[in-house]
Image (tube, rainbow, N blue to C red; front, side, top):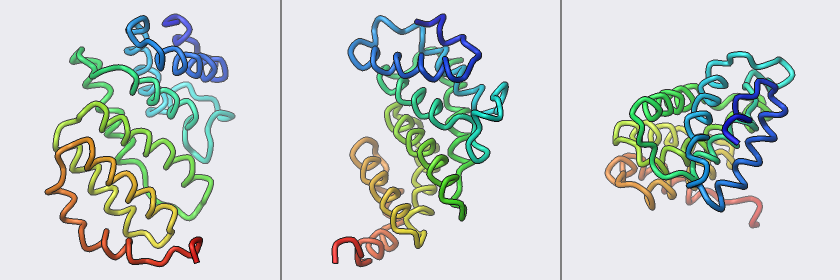
Amino acid sequence: MAQLLDERDMGVLTSCMSLLVALVSNNHDAYWSCLPKCVKTLERLARNQDVPQEYTYYGIPSPWLQVKTMRALQYFPAVEDPNTRRSLFEVLQRILMGTDVVKNVNKNNASHAVLFEALALVMHLDAEKEMMSQCVALLGKFIAVREPNIRYLGLENMTRMLMVTDVQDIIKRHQAQIITSLKDPDIRLT
């Protein structure tokens, strides 16, 4: 399986990553050799290296492959190799800092899918407090947005962060905005 992750064709690589997600969901022990290759794939995508234009969606290099790769990584326990861990956190940092809310709905959907999968991976890896603080600050921006779907995604992910990590003191800084968001009427319920 690890050799398949060296594939340069994005369509084949996306299919291989789907297979890997299914396999590691049942038994990650047999696929440890795939972990560094997944990180290399994410690095390649984050740097937009060798990504054909037809696999770039609204300026985002293969968001589907990015999401699948990060999902596969979540089935492994913490990354222990220091070089692989450093590379992975550099990629995650790039994703976190490179995502913003824009007016184009399609671009938002793709970039937010990548972002929220990156947040899930950061939580899974139990990142250092500084990165968690950046995640909370980013989510704070999302809960302040007028678009209700984005606000709900921000609130949902803040809740997940509270359940996984010790960031209560950081999230408290956003308490007023959270309460305001919770008081906002949901037009879908009326």
